[in-house]
Figure 1: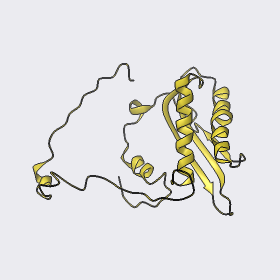
Figure 2: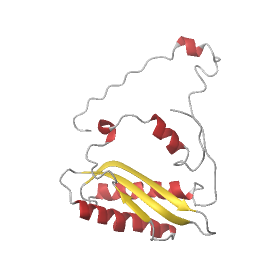
Figure 3: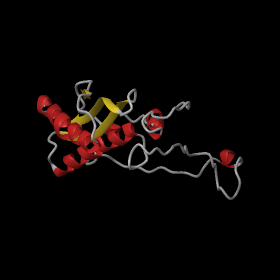
Figure 4: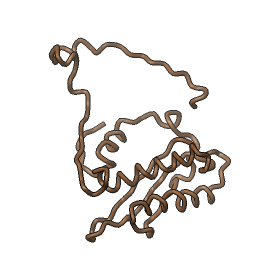
Length: 173
């Protein structure tokens, strides 16, 4: 955890083999970034509605955790929002949130708080429906989180960068 970890920064110059394929202006490999995106008028931030709501859910939950209002919550949080676009007005189909928690938490109260004080509040901000499917910590337990629980990021990071899967991506990880 943050209080007991050792941070070690190990950096070196780029491989001279890779640098051969670029020019002096770039100073190394110029292909080391993934740039992806598009703008939509679906939200004020010009991002697709599902990822905007998912980001706001985690942002708001994190604020409540820092204020001390969100008992038992720990920092590792994830959200996914599915929007049904079959009708003219978008409708939330499903909201999933996985939130790390203390080992000695009240699961029923924890889940009630997430649904009523986080999900419903954020949904109200968007003026959308409340009759959506809810999944909260579907594996049941989420005590071990952060890099201690799972350090593999590449594949998931690529999908996050595609606005939570709102846009197709064919790259591997």
